[in-house]
Image (cartoon, rainbow, N blue to C red; front, top):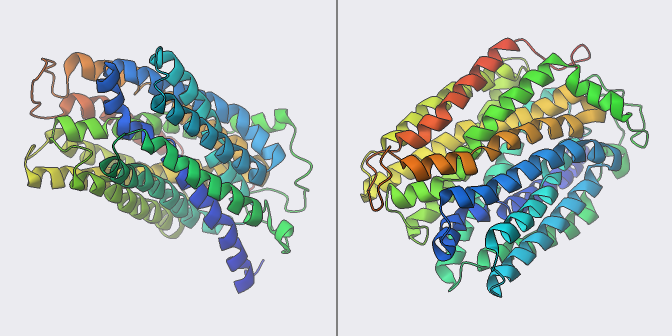
Length: 447
């Protein structure tokens, strides 16, 4: 299909609202990371206990995407994003009301339950984006779409971190951080209802062969049977390899994101209410955008739409960035704080690049138009199973051994080798997995 200016504009009106919705959903997901240490201090919960809440959410998400992937393939991405955003908004509202009204008698249980429900609805986000865009983008464009996917993620981190920090600085209570995403997601539900369409033919254009082995003439109303959907995951060795790689990505990604606030506070003495803390969200956003676009451009232009070689390179650079984070150079000084923020942004660049490439692009490539959400669910689901280990697992390690191997109360850590030492092996394993599918490429033979 020759893409006219009108088609590209209508496609923009499709993916841009989806991207904004996904970003606002992230705002209602990573707000927990920003205030996790506040909740722990206020209610006397240590890193391992707060990690239980995080793990409950991660593992709920991991199981939910495995179920909701086939569901999104059947009901369509448009309905899925509406359900997800509306449900996540309601859950954030309930969490905010719980803290605002002091309903915290059994906080560990109630917060774990509400946060798990929030993550259930959050699981529709990536599935919806991948499902809808699998019909609007050709294989040759999907590397660039992987970059767009990275921009979505990065914008969400900016909203959660920078905007969240600004809200905390301007408000008397940290409960405000739960209510802002409710309003943002509510607005986007209305926008998506008005603008988002599942496929070009629903917007007055012609459906076309996307080059991923799907039949462009199959009706969306006749979804693949569940057995055939699952066979696309279990029976494809490329997807199986990607599943294991995403497990590693999950641990690396959330191992950084779940503890970066406490890392800055306890190692670099940078409070989340300080002006410089807001720059962390900007660093995440810029790093994520650059990483996503670079990863997509490299795969499409240098490796003929092959994703594994680029992911291999990015995994190895993650190791370098994490090692630099572990050194904690110039800690406690203004220059050291700036250095830490820059390093977090660079680390995000290579983590988010891989995440967008594997979850956002490879899932379309090897799942095909009819099973894109199912494969995205498998990849995203196993990623969050790995993420769950960073909650109670990495939380227990940091509580027991501290950032630098000394867990004495009041001790000022000199470095963060314990933290990054737990994360780096997963980047190395991810790189090794990419070598086993080095030549994998989308098309009828593989998809």
